Image 1 (cartoon, rainbow, N blue to C red):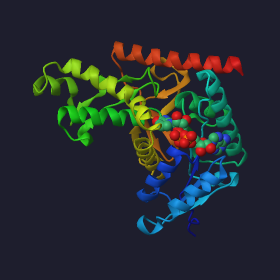
Image 2 (cartoon, protein in one colour):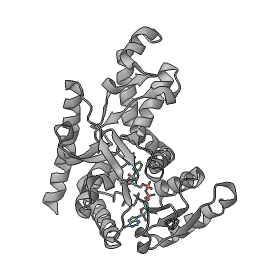
Image 3 (cartoon, rainbow, N blue to C red):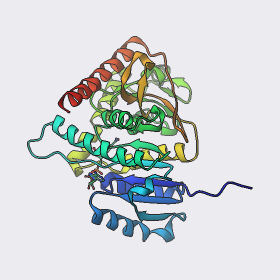
Length: 320
Ligand SMILES: NC(=O)c1ccc[n+]([C@@H]2O[C@H](COP(=O)([O-])OP(=O)(O)OC[C@H]3O[C@@H](n4cnc5c(N)ncnc54)[C@H](O)[C@@H]3O)[C@@H](O)[C@H]2O)c1
């Protein structure tokens, strides 16, 4: 007798700009059989569902509907993009406290449903909220992951590819650490078609000072979200695609190397903190954290990034 067929189901919690754009890209990917949207704003969720479902004739078959907490029970992947917006005069810590409460209550609902899904946290500050979600669930750390620096790494690859005049698919490069100001470029792990970036740039001769160009690229990666938010108020397209990439690794058991946010347990000499490091991502979530031997300057930048995040976690815990 064969096992009963189970639809590949993705539940998206938070149907705002990021959740809806992810749903739109995911529907076109053909990866899931079912996409379920949930939002505290029921009318928003219904509107997004109806709008997306009208596209059924143009993308691979997939059921799209609004969901209930019971939908967590048999989901393969639950993606949390729910979040509060900063109120006038509200501090960063105040916003963090409110978002931590939202994530904790969503995790409680997921756990109560005895779900065995992989949970992917996207809401910001993503590394801290991934840590909060993982601790609250009591689940193995690989099952609760954050989108980490997957988007930042894609921005890095794109900017390097444009600078060097090489297809982004041939650029292997990672941004590590916080998804935010303290993130760092792992130049020691960067290569173009297998050639270490320094070797490639030294031989290329296209720019006068490639070291200065590298510094500018890292700055552009770090500031990218600020510029987009200044122009249009939110970022949604590239992050939606980054989430499809992570979803593919989980739903298709791809064992892809992605810089998701992982709660570290001694890797890189760090623990008690979640941050973006290269991980093998499969149907179980994080199957393995890849521990690269970073040179001292990169290791020190990663440790500093962890300290920034640990301090924020400590202020959150002391204010609870
Ligand atoms: N990690 C990344 O790379 C990345 C990139 C872009 C945005 N983000 C983050 O993603 C989050 C969402 O951004 P957005 O632009 O879609 O915001 P948004 O305001 O458009 O959407 C957030 C949605 O969450 C809903 N919500 C709030 N509390 C909820 C709850 N308890 N249960 C269910 N739904 C709830 C709101 O009703 C709203 O529709 C933000 O925290 C943003 O900073 C992360």
